[in-house]
Image (cartoon, rainbow, N blue to C red):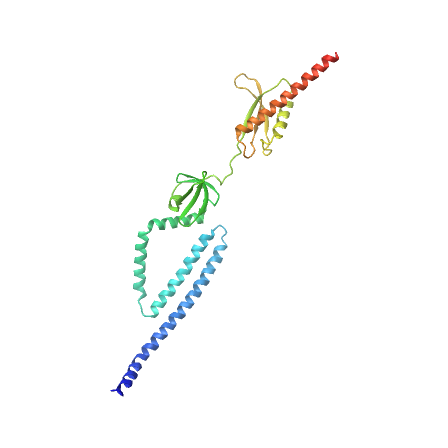
Length: 279
């Protein structure tokens, strides 16, 4: 019995040796395929990033997203090649993976729709970070744009997270794309009994000297007729300085003009008094 046990073990090893060698070769081939697959995946990802960097309008997040898709696609092919090396039928496996992917897609169709909308927003860029927009009933400044949601901060400092599906599928108003026309203020002065041209120049000089009035674009001073009594008037239009409301800027201009008129009138009275005393 003791002499038969070594012979039995040797016979068993002889029978199993081809199987062991074959499986070892399959394992080595699988390891080699995985190494090559990871190398090709990294190379393909780098090439995708390099190609996408040539398109300056693409967002960095979108470049990462597409390059990762390329990498995982190559890794999936390498995994299927490894399974095929061990004799597993990859055709049926691909069918099972496709059915599972379809089921997962149906279960996550809402999330995937937000992902697709995020990709479209990142490609076409209807707005950028810092733009003032109005979408889905929310008015505020864009703080962040991700693949799944858009963060907007309202004027009263409230954070609003909007799923990208609602952003892409709704009318969007972007107030930062085109510059707004300057808000102008208008003041009408009754023309004093003197040279209209000189009065217009005096009012323009006074307006330009005030910090409440922007120098660019410069204020405009024109003559007009009053619609009620057909009286001649001086019309001053100007752009209020930053941080000034139209009402406060109008008040400063009116006060400065009437102060100048009072000073001029007082100077005339003094001149008239002095002339009468000399007589």
